[in-house]
Length: 280
Ligand code: NDP
Image 1 (cartoon, helix red, strand yellow):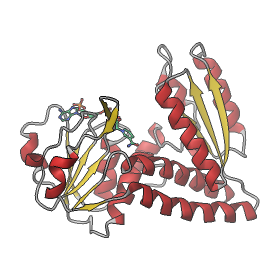
Image 2 (spheres, protein in one colour; image 1 turned 90 degrees about the vertical axis):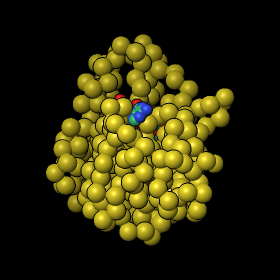
Image 3 (cartoon, helix red, strand yellow; image 1 turned 45 degrees about the vertical axis):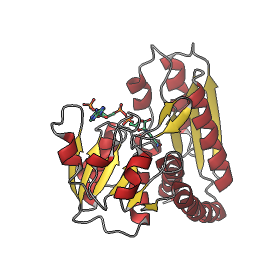
């Protein structure tokens, strides 16, 4: 079994981006990411802090807007519309979840498609479905980078994704299809999950259930990517029972240190991409 080191792969993506940011700056474009945080969810605060820190490491300018629980949809939309109109801002990110009572869809919808670096908008999702240029959600994009880092061919492989959310499972299915994998997406209504997952050359778990993927669900020599982030007795763990599965697979990602670091790196990738597009 070989470990796929997400931290290392993320570092090499960041090195590439650092050079691209420097080049853009030489040409008078300073990539800029605006991050909006509402409420005081501790996990969201950590995520936002990490995103801002990473942006700064790469020379990307970051703007941070924080609001307390009592913020209204209108106030958030007003800030977003100002950022939409500001040509020096290339990416706008609203950290989810928003405080209870706020309509996330309405708030996210107000982000201009050209600055939707999370790739969540209907337009960007549609572009992904059609195989056209847009922004691809960061976590699935990171999973593809991790798979490519192994040097193994994706084309022709049987890929099984457990989870069909709009932010991970669904877009990942489209990306794997684009890479010419044969893709199956599983969910709570899937019958005989074990039999299906055992057919996978590439198995991705994006479920949110601690250690649910066990060795009897994994084919010998499979590549296993664990997207899950779960907290058990205060400790982080994935959707894959790592110790139980590791000897069965050819490659596996750890949690933490697998997909997580890639999500932030790909957010930076999308911000730089947006800056490049604006410079054209
Ligand atoms: P969602 O809760 O939106 O989706 C979970 C999916 O898993 C659903 O499609 C659900 O099926 C399916 N599912 C749940 N239980 C089972 C089961 N027993 N058998 C088969 N399928 C099941 O989660 P997300 O996609 O947002 O996130 C998934 C995990 O990835 C979470 O742990 C999250 O924290 C983590 N995550 C990690 C990121 C990172 O950067 N590493 C980024 C984003 C998420 P159904 O549709 O039928 O309900």
